[in-house]
Image 1 (cartoon, chains in turn blue, red):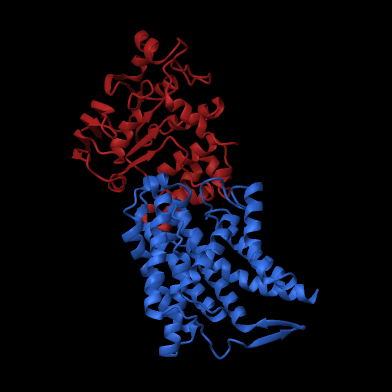
Image 2: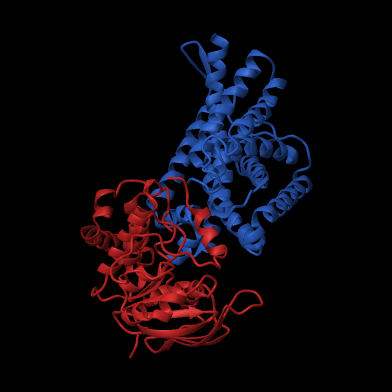
Length: 292
Length: 268
């Protein structure tokens, strides 16, 4: 029992970070019908940026975020402008899959040349520090990462509900034609949406860099995990993605602790297949259109 | 000077022309109802005015200015608001948020709230259901909120594309009642309607569009009284006065438009 509770704690902490990673993906899909398979690569890119700033400038990963996040936001807008915007809206969903895959491979290639394929990790002074709470171990880095994810998701939620551009984003998600008729510049909104989506990758990357060793190929693992989560949660639903991420985090940790880590990876696919058989639109999907 | 004037407008999609030289004039503060069979180009006329579609030839003059080449946003800035045929509320936002979105281009939250409050006095539905998700309202209720939202910018010209399409008879009557009540509020309205009788009964002017041209442009009452028009465009003879709550006659050549409307009707 102790083992299971310990695993649940670990799973929730990991799940919070998964939630942050998935939020960017689901946002891009909701606003633009773009399945951004480069999200994993953007996270790994952020991990490398965190690593570089840590090793060469001595910046703590949580501080480095203040620099990396705006950078990723701008990069996201640029990617949208250069690669996504020229796609015709009728076949954007299909073509975006290919285009963002190309972006992912491009990022992977550049990272492989610059950093080689050796595994790296960011070891801060508190990387291995833990707390003991009632007999259960909590890794400090994971806890901070969890808090950070919750904070950023909260900010994202506030931005979507309380700001003008946020309302415009939700309007475009829910009814693009009507949004245009009300004077919302959908392409500009799409660029900001993609920028926000890429910006979430920066915090995710920083946490990833502190918790796991990574190399340029790590984005393959990430993206398969993230796609599972957003399909599970219902494409385009932010709330669904968060719940699915927490669920997957816990399921993975509990299975890894009780059976074996090899089986844990498999849970994602078992869960996904089972869900798709029972509820093809995902847990919280609203048939076709998103639900931000 | 009339508010809007279309002269010899030719427009269409792809290679074909849907409008083959339209002439239409809207006088200020009147309601004009555009009727005609499916595929005649009624919705295309609205799209040409609102800037969603640019005409190939001809001019669209609004207060004397040619607006034929403007983008939707620029047309909106002039005070022309279009309510599309499809459901146009944001289903996951509350009724109130939807109202505020109607004044998005104002970029003034306080003013938007003030206008929404004053419209809430006029529209009981907005007042009573303001916190409810727009998607939970029935089709007819959603249409009424769409109409209220269209007034948020206090537009000079309102374009309604088949507001009664796909609604139950009672809801349809309510929509026409509200549209009729807009008369005298300072707005000019162009209404495209499949339910021709009901549409004409609240209109000052009527125009018959057939095969891409305006066949007739007359006071609404004389169109309703014209036996030839009744036979060709209004279906079987019926009491022409008042809002018809019966099912409208379906044209035998019912094309994709009608089926499309049915399909769009979501589960309520």
